Image (tube, rainbow, N blue to C red; front, side):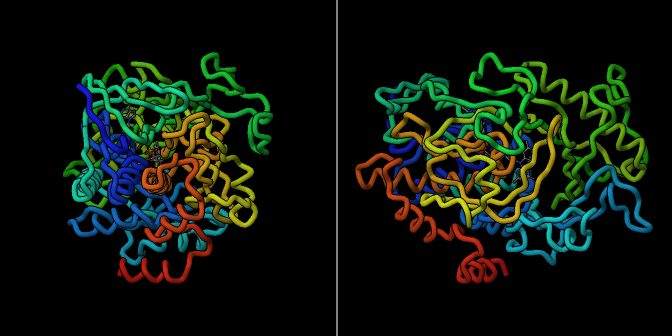
Length: 485
Ligand SMILES: Cc1cc2nc3c(=O)[nH]c(=O)nc-3n(C[C@H](O)[C@H](O)[C@H](O)COP(=O)(O)OP(=O)(O)OC[C@H]3O[C@@H](n4cnc5c(N)ncnc54)[C@H](O)[C@@H]3O)c2cc1C
């Protein structure tokens, strides 16, 4: 079967939802194609239902937050609770960092990360300043579906894009797993690993970048093995993966039995990883083991992560008696991948941008801002805070050599270090919002998206309440405060 659309958005994770909403609202016919049986991507399928603090999340993410607030127990803001490094007098020890729902905190409080000091450095500051959002994944998927339906987006679920044809830098059509061929005027790759761009032969990056590639001060000089399949100066190490689980209060006081074939000791590293445990609006904790494994693309990967997860939960219950009053209620159906392949675009965001910040970058085409720490989990990792927000240039969404495709996901054109900061769900949504908006501006003007004047795109985004400046403009701050009251 053959069909057509104005804009095909591939992948319905954070980036894809932002892109499809923005494009359809701007007047295009949009087809959103998602291979999983539900939309939401990592935020739903991998159970990453927290939004850490980040600057710039004032567009589609704020709308989703407001819609979630209309549902019972669907969303809350959070603050620090207990912490393994800073036990307070009289507190029971905790197996990592606890985040607790906090009614005193509003959305505005979740929009700053830079300048963060750790609990060890300045406990009072960290407790007063670090706030995020936690939501119920099912409610999030429902709300996003409703918003897409109201806007008029056609959503295909359980269907993957399996191929694409491009001629002279233009994708002509994509092929779906059900045999359909979709022709479009523009294509937005929001797959999280640049699957569409890879299918038409774009240059890709994967793994940590050697220092001589971008001259980044914190890039490894010699790291791991050269990856035979990913070419250019990459190592195979990626930001680590985590299989998330949910625990719920139970009327018991026991350690749940560990299957006989799973050791009770940690067999893959020196000791069990600590956990980021976030209180969930409908009860229990969302448990994010930091991390579960180095990502490997193999059929056995999920099962190995599941075994580690069960051992981890057994350790938590054995060593921290309060958890015997909980049961393991849910294991995410997909492992959360912090990083896969990335597309080489017209501009590659690097650590230099993160360190220069908005005041020093000097790009004229910034379409989103962010300020999460450089945050690599696993071997050779670490967390380095930034001193001011940085901007993401539109050129990071433009795959080199393609004219009618934009990439808006964690696979956008970032170095591994930049990706470790930029990948947050709300930032991906903002990239999607910019890509959807740019694609429609281009169609209206009979030009290709890379040629849309940056000033026009930025004006359009500002009109959609997107924050492009730091500090935030007063009228935007007041609008958020009033709307969230
Ligand atoms: C363990 C973990 C913890 C994290 N913690 C936080 C946090 O606290 N706060 C925060 O903000 N961020 C956090 N992140 C980062 C954040 O969750 C992700 O980077 C972000 O959600 C990625 O969004 P995305 O749209 O780029 O990709 P995804 O959400 O992965 O969406 C990509 C979508 O594309 C679909 N797809 C892929 N290929 C195809 C195809 N061929 N055809 C059709 N569909 C396809 C996928 O099924 C998926 O739905 C965390 C990530 C992990 C893994």
